[in-house]
Length: 280
Image 1 (cartoon, helix red, strand yellow):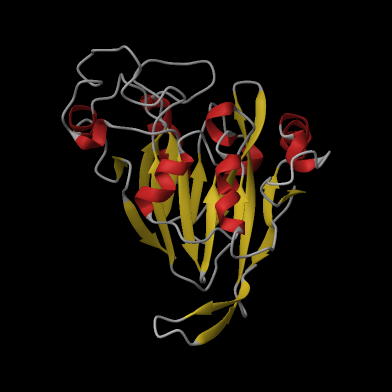
Image 2 (tube, rainbow, N blue to C red):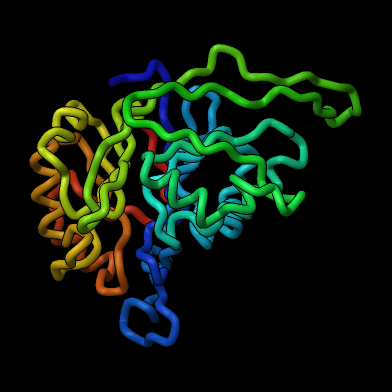
């Protein structure tokens, strides 16, 4: 379950499907001046072994990529097909301007089928010549990702430099989860696991989460919800998994960061947009 590389995760967005502030809302969280209460839709960048892996590309991805100064994407790991996790796919197009190699998009088989229909102009009919060059790769077991970059660039003095990925392979383990009744994936990379939009973790997935240093887990709000863990349910799941550190994501505007975090166990925190963490 481990990779011989240091892993860096950047939280590009930590909010629920509406984002926070919610349009038209004037509640105390939506009007908070604490930057940790400003939450774009959930997405994360994983840097490991020289590779840049994106988890989900929601409708805020363009701004997230500019804010985090993302220069390359080697692969995308899609958790599921809901709007707030996939509708920034078109904004990946600039990453092909200087590198013609397609970006592999790893998905559960059921998600791949939906995305083929949802983004038919990208994956099926070729009706629009400027579409992102992406390939769907359904997975159901651990898989390896290697670098896709091999191209010539100009150094500041104008001299050429050939760049390509060598010996950069990372093992990814899909983690089956449930988002309400919808089967979705989380992903384990080394000693880190990212589980968004989760309402149940099957018993068969628990062994895949043992020995974690860092767990990233859905915790929607204090109140229960039919397709997400509440904060109390997320604490219970995190305790069962037993990671050294747990960070909650996908929070609504019912979560005031400073107030709610003070109620959490010491090894559990709320993530926030722009937070960077490292593990192995």
